[in-house]
Length: 454
Image 1 (cartoon, one colour):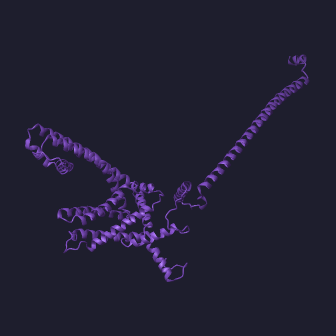
Image 2: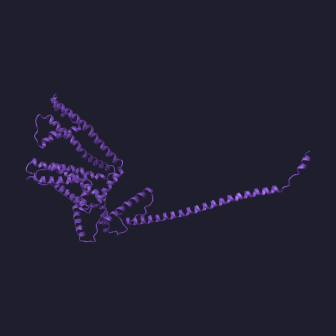
Image 3: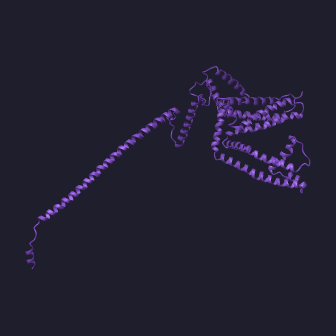
């Protein structure tokens, strides 16, 4: 907020707000984008209208050229500063992270600065003839093409265009590895066909320009289906054996390159496109994070005024080297000890997992859960010991309970045996009482019974 309650409403407060505003990544990005567009416009104007051989009438350097040189030099200083401010502590680690992690971006970056200064040297040395001076213009023209390609980086912040740039970068990588196969096929056809059939009715000299003009360049355009000139040269001597053999070789070459290899390359492009398209949102967020982190570390000023910030940062760096209490702005703390670095990485991973889990389950994130790795290990050890102790107690309780159940079963079996014995005894006693009762009853007189019946 512009009006803060923590500070008094003074000019110092306004200057502090202004400083924070210009240090935000989005403002730095906007300033650098605008300055880069101005740089491309002035570079194009300089090559189109003011690139001439220095003479007595024409000044040796134009103000647009001075501005372009300042812009490129200050941008080079900023790239050197970013290279030195990487997280890796060793120079080997910085080189590996800078040149191996993002090879495509690094190659374009190095070529842009290398061609510019080569062209600048040729600009002021090859002034004795128009032919020699054209070499400087060719080098700077190619360099301007690379600077235009580098402007695609500013489109990475767009959600719709950012993943498309990643697709282009991946496809260029696929094309780079696939170019070797195509070059082998083209050079093989060019050398073999020219050795069998003389297309120009004369032998060409053995030098680089002639070899490129007669072998490499014509066979390259066969990849696009441009075979009219090739067939016209072969049809001049239709009946010769070399012409027939070259026709057969051309048919096989077109089948192999234009049907098999080109369709294979299209399939590779389709796979790359689909793999990134399925994760468009994740790819864009990753690229956006990289861009935000890059502009977080950038100075607030833009080229060529960024040289002022470089001088100030150099003075601060020298002061920090001689002072042990000075602090600097950092994006991430890197432990000097490897164990500390590993524990901090484990903490970040654990905190990230907890945060994602809280988002998925819609539960608040517990701060008490985010503990260092040593305390996590101690807590896990204590938890394991408690679990082991509880498991041992449970096992002993289970054993006692089993013994008690066994004893109860034994008692019940004894009681059942005694009950069955008592039941037999009672049954015997009842039978005995019935016999006694029957023996005490009087028997009837058999004689009186017979007379009565008579």
